[in-house]
Length: 290
Image (cartoon, rainbow, N blue to C red; front, side, top):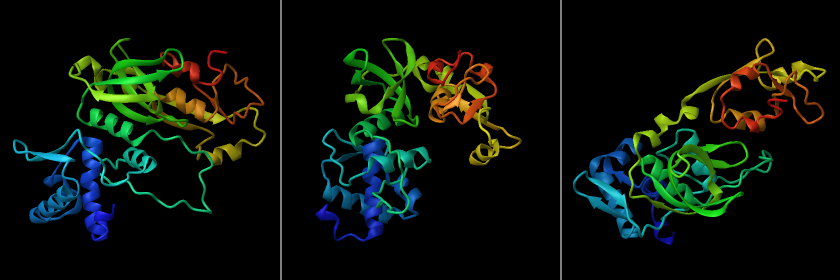
């Protein structure tokens, strides 16, 4: 990045925004830059010129809609940190810039997710952002490496790893695919149909109220009530059906009949297990059905 040394911080931020948008959304326009940084038209034109001088192969201008589009020869001008990208996107930072934040020696994250390759994240994000299907290689525990036709619509942190929610054209249903298991991703020629889009994903669009209480085996339940900011000894969460089992597993919520799990670290119990009827991946919920 020696070609960026002479730029001041503000200029680098604007060029990084262009770079980020091309890599993760596939296109960017001067109006996007103006909206983000409150610059004028002439200033944004200079920024695109500066970016083009440093990475001439990365984008081409479509005169039809006045947008710059990512080329197949694209090579990122900036290093976008995977953790910052994914956390930023989760927080609605969709038009933002990832930055490597120096780790603290006094405030530590004891459990860190393994992050996918930025190239894979970028390919998935472009497909989601532009509502495209993908042809991809994927390694599963049961089948090894196979090629798939998917229509992705959301990227999710399930507490253990990042996965993408997508319609699987072979099995004709929405499924979760672990982001680190993709070997390649290419845009598919076949456009998504209505029944392959997010609006058709019943489990994704259905919301469930889960009511959590301190586990009955806890001698001092007030401590758990304080940990989870419970009111009247209960915490109610409104969660997507497609994600509720991940939450219950991550929080080690006892979902068994009469809360029979003991000695396994469960500090919470599910007060309304009947609400989980119809959840497709309910086998992930600790003790459910037992």
